[in-house]
Image 1: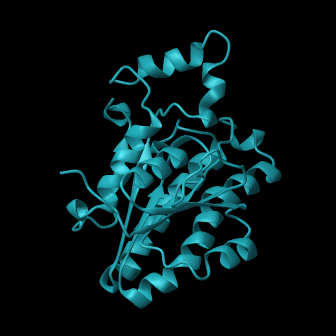
Image 2: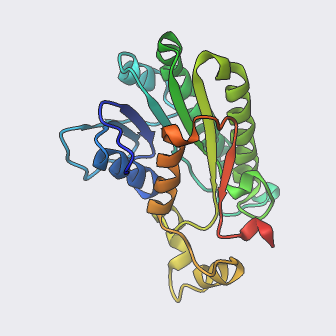
Length: 239
């Protein structure tokens, strides 16, 4: 029987494209009311969808937009890459941008919705990590450091609020074909082909596959899972 989320309110950051957009569509298809947050506009037009045009790192805008929203499920999905820059190639502006979106933004959005979750003693938080949060080579210095921070933050959130009815887990994707990775497919797509060849499963995954794992983590089927980071990497870390 397909999981239904009818009557649930879901917040998805990074909702305008890629994994975030796939998560939005997946929850809408299963009856949820969805609030999307992104710096970009979206083409999603649905009665049960509300779009907030804001950066997750804009504390004031996020707090105003989500102040009166009773959120059942939060998907902290917004993220940016760093072009695989080494530490010496990473200037302070790039470092700050990556951490502002990937880490600080997650903290800001979580803190905006968590008090209401705690009042109701119920809430599910799903954070988007990466295999770059577990191993080196999945990004540059800033991105890898930020995703390690995301995993640490996820585990601490779970530790602090598990007994208060809050369930926190994360997903660590590998090669997912999204607009964020479009550069890998440019020209003859040599980089994309190389990544597929280096992945034991032999292919990139689609955003819908990440959305499917999200639905599982948001469902009652995963009720006893806490502080778990699920790799979705086609066997990359098994090499």
